[in-house]
Image 1 (cartoon, rainbow, N blue to C red):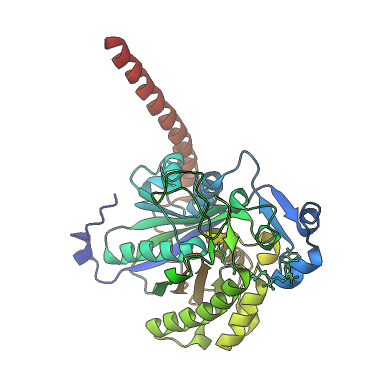
Image 2 (spheres, rainbow, N blue to C red):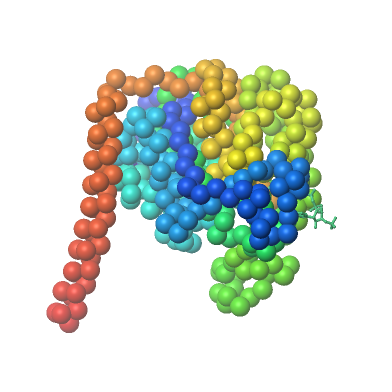
Length: 389
Ligand code: ACO
């Protein structure tokens, strides 16, 4: 059970480390290629690929949403970690495209998983959101207030794009990635993080929406951008991104007491291949040390880092004891870097894989039944109260 009070647990374990023990990703069924895009937007495959490195992106269909993608990625991460949803203390979903302002997307995922002992909330830090969320969860683990957390980056960017604006709609895609973080006495895991923001750049990149500033949806945003549609000053964001990637990676290395050259793999936010190449040059690192899959997914905002991490693991680019740097940057402006020493502690003996897989599936079914029956009970109770009055 998540307590967040610090309290008793903290003194029992002297050294606690937060390790990534599970990972998973999900993308929609349908891909949209540059050629297909160029049939309804004035652009071309050559322009998009040369300026960004993107060839295609995945677009959610009617039945898919930020929460359904997050749920799929979460199920995979729980399989790899081989833990039960009921073992989770915390679920954080980093997203700029939540299902609602509230309830949080994390609460929906919590319900669908039957993770009934977990606290759940969404975190908004645009493309840096996943690293922010991972840092919050790792700190809670290291402080002793929780044992395990599910951290998800999930987006349906296609729903907030202005499909007539060729300078933004060609860049983004939909998807979700998730990791399970767990407490361990094995040294390593999350070593250091750097979280930064510069709100003076808030006009460079955003999605104007109705909020507490003005509840009137006829309001036009201050820079003339359409409500609920993304706007971006691309070249300024480009310059900002190349600067903060190198700066924040250097800072997180210093905080962890290692040299930039000791980094084995950088898993950056996948915005634009040229940004990653420029950042690698600035850091004096080989461009091969930067994981990139932007070609196939485009920019999936908060989902891009966990998706790239999953693919790096699948491609065997992540080995035990490797130093992995994560770095996110984007709207806010906000940016964040994290250094991890990879090392998945041995799964504990109580987790028999086959048995647990069945138990997880039973829990997912129970979750559906429990949710429906609770809603049904509330409806019946309301009716009974109405009849009595
Ligand atoms: N197809 C064809 N031509 C285009 C397109 C397009 N899709 N988009 C713009 N152009 C044209 C422009 O109109 C312009 O024409 P002009 O010279 O006649 O005026 C020309 O191409 C150059 O436009 P630029 O905007 O200067 O192109 P640039 O090389 O800067 O590339 C891009 C644009 C890809 C958006 C780049 O600036 C970029 O990647 N920026 C950073 C994005 C980013 O990192 N975002 C991170 C965070 S996202 C988040 O937080 C949600």
